[in-house]
Length: 307
Image (cartoon, rainbow, N blue to C red; front, top):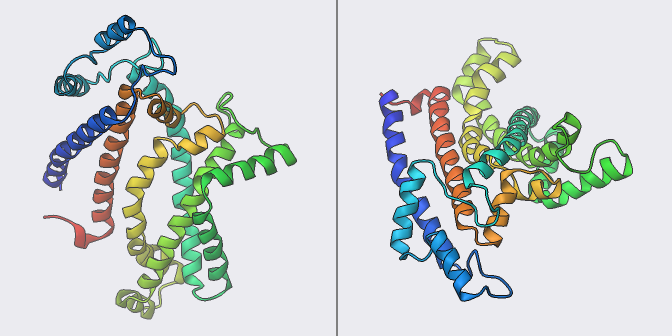
């Protein structure tokens, strides 16, 4: 298993390199630039800026220069946030996004497993139809609709929770953005677990342990749930990376100073280094979480283990 993990880690290097290369050249080929303003700067000022940030070099030299610096953890200065490096901006915003994402992922996975299991145990009955109907609605309604509705109900109408802002990071400031992030995840995990749980409950080994007279909760939790979690575990990798790196919409709605807003601001203002830094972070997290999912998958399903 250790050898397989090491081999997977080595194989991720070309993947990350391709992501960096594609992102770098796509950003450069996009119209406009970091210093393209409504009123153009004087030519001598523009020349000094291009020289300062090494944008006057040929494109291939810029790429090599950025790649070597990125390998050392230096993502360069931000073009928009003067006096701040990309590393400082990412580390400052990642803590906020990580707290929201971790809670949303935990609630989404736990809630989805519970709802999906209850629906599967009551297949084709009211406890199945109700949660699945709500799950379908939860999947189809986007965050930019759920967020304002929650603010309208709990902040404006009832006055129970703040409408936005991080504040001191207390629980009252986090409830609404966490719920907004977690609701679609609960719906997705519930449908995944329901389908796989129904299949697991009709498998041969479940019939065998049922014939042995084991209690229902032992059959469901110990035997059926282990196999039913496999589709949910497969989805957990990309969803964890997306949640932990922040949701652009949710952070914007609730004025959370997370990493998502840096990506949007960087893209709109052609802040090459800031966009590249966030892309590298997201790609790295996706690779890491997919590796962890593969390990967890082999633990849950012995058939997926490597010799």
